[in-house]
Length: 392
Image 1 (cartoon, rainbow, N blue to C red):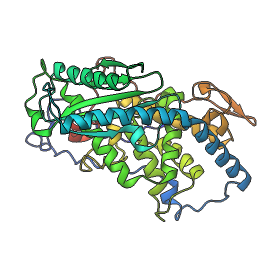
Image 2: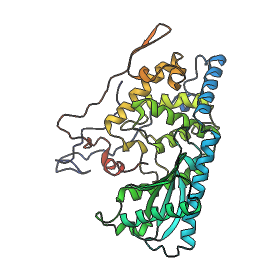
Image 3: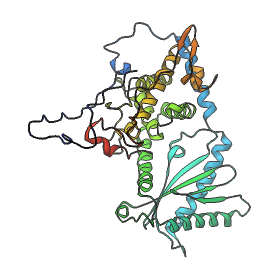
Image 4: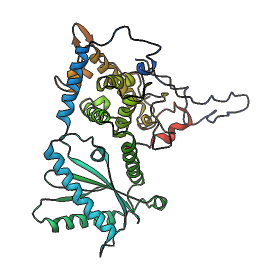
């Protein structure tokens, strides 16, 4: 595998760090991201010599739909999580309207976010996310008091229900025997400048909670296509089963599914089979490698490319895993990729498909031994430092 061009060697300091440089030195050219090869966009220039046989495509489509059906939560799971979310939301909404004697904090609004809000939950993970935006500063004591208040109110209404409340660094979790409500707490934007690390929740987590609200709002406006929701569920499953895809965040998967299905010359939604294949082709071509234009985050003004939250090693791992799986898919191994047959060893061990040997690829990038973990080489110009904070 050949890694995409990452620009010149750009250290953290030293001569020529800026755009200008010293006397007699040539100014550094601006960083210009490139667009990796995409057969869907390039098809007018590269018409296919042969098409995929209809029988093969139909079998692949049937396998994708079956896998999606297996991953979709049962009616019992959906009923349990909806019931819990409705109860929690009602208590929080009531605290906004009439807090009574509760004065530990004041709530501005409550928003449902994440896979529950988007309709992309998978079976076996019956967790819904909510964001509580406070008018007041989010002290750890106030957040725990809010969790206890919600728990006490719910227990008063249904004393026999087994319900637990566990505070955590993001807020708190409320769980019964069948579902969990994960409540992330943040504060109104003006308060984000008044935080004290010793008293309040971590600033990064507060910003991440606001990002979750923006992501859910964008998804609601742009990704209600049923095929997109199906694809996201399939991608979450792929990420869970293949370790090489673990660096991909839920927000990356949302945008990747949206891009693969709708970003094409006709602007009509691609079929599930074509989009699934395209995602592996894009990642294999270096869509999420250094230097690639990738996908601009629509919730950050378009100035941040979502894949740059990954380290260089993680970007490399995503690419080589996709390349190996694409070769398996090309030789008919879709059942193993979807998890219907076999296991995830096809990404890390040699496999044979109709006499064709597919060997897993090796890393193209290794962190230099003198560079500490988390300290990446600046290969993408000045924007690199600002991008690494974004993610969901």
